Image (tube, rainbow, N blue to C red):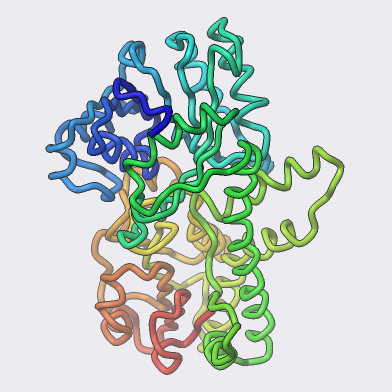
Length: 426
């Protein structure tokens, strides 16, 4: 393929849900690949064949030709740097480009003329060329767009979803010019079996990525608002959606908590950039407000039902099942289950948290909550099934109810049980 460099030496920075599968894929495609992460403990675990996120098998790690390192000096001989760096938001819900800037600052001293830097992080339009590019040039002393080449190829990783793996999803690629785009394609095409899509510009690709998750966020916000309305009307939202779903073009979105690193975060990148241009988004931010308040709604509905059953919340013990942001994965970033726990404590409820997928120490450090390894049978006044882990689905409503006292309230947030089996559903 035009532009392919057989001797391309690639560094993938950030070995999380995005970077680690990509590093392994590049190595399988024959590229000299270095996986880099600043977390020394994570690197040590990978070298022992363990991915703490549970996304990559031990066999894949032990047989890969990719190397792993936390030593910045190992970045010195690379010709392409792919950044899979988290792009979170601040407490004020503004983009936090600190981790991305730090990564750019780390690789800058090792850049040589002709080196290629590709971002995979979700950003607002303009970050690659107007934020990262100048930083790389300033820190390296090289000329941007001449000595340093820029590309952007947004990730489409779905944690816990083996069906939609890296190789099976079309990869959007973009670059500063046609020749660089050919080079970017030569890197990704051998890895992505589903093929690549060449965007006309980096900003177009950045914009496309940020609206992918924003669109989903708004659609979930709409059905969450349906749930807020129907709870007041005494209707079962999931049943209403099922009936409406008999229409051929009705979209199958369901109510729920919107957490994780993408859907609950990316819209703020787009709204931030829009406001820089003097436009104040209305629909996007309205959707964000609805989704961010669903944890409070869950607790309010639970407390009302408890009071109906003469259960005093301040004397009650509640079990929350699941803490990760979605089912069957270990990712606890921006999980909205934390909102439920915080709100329950505001009602002076005694809360037990149980999640077979989550790391207890990580939860304690990041959120300040303790985990219960084994819930006690016949103990709880209410049980909230917050995440649809397969373990909970396999338990079934009857076994889960056995964890509660007689008359305990079962709130099935994810709708994994029939409406006759749960007292409350979103």
